[in-house]
Amino acid sequence: MSKESTLNRIRELGLLAVLRGPSPELTLQMVDALVEAGVLGIEITYSTPNAPQVVSELSKKYGKHILLGMGTLTRAEHAAEAKAAGAHFIVSPHCEDELAHAMVGTELAVMIGALTPSEVMHAYQLGSDVIKLFPGLLGGPAYMKALRGPFPDIPMMPTGGVSADNLGDWFAAGAIAVGAGSELCPPALAKEGRFAEITERAAAFVASVNAARSTR
Image (cartoon, rainbow, N blue to C red; front, side, top):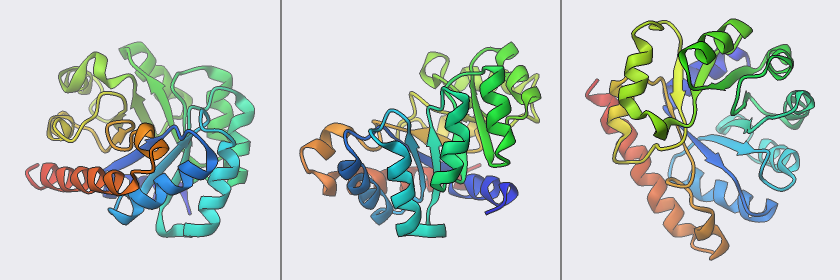
């Protein structure tokens, strides 16, 4: 999948599930529960045990049916590892030059984490296709709207603090998509085997995303 196709699909889906799974097996089941509800943008973080293996298995199982990424990249070697595993996009929680160069060098879609105006501009200049506004809960949608003033042409996606209740505010503030973690797919539910509840939560998120974007 080309970078352009990946970025277009991120915009089309509007929602990426950010998974910090408690184990490889439970993470795979979490993804199955999300996909059943129509959540097709999946980001497996490096804080998930054996994350590259999980991504590789998901890539084999779902192919192009889902948009698959790896997040919480913190070391330069993570970038090539994520690409080899089958990721379509890669995400870091912070902006650091060596890591950014490695990420951009993969030619995958890149999202570098940033919060302040200086970090946003620096990440974009390093080649980030989309800025991951993180942690989004610190400033909320109003903060993103303020950032969009001086940076109207820099695509942004908040992660952290995104819920089904505030999705509309994030999209109204200019987000091209949102990243949702424990609000969408709580690891505790997976540990308890309550995957049907994960599917219910995911379906509610998808409905909220569709409703929010229909009013824009």
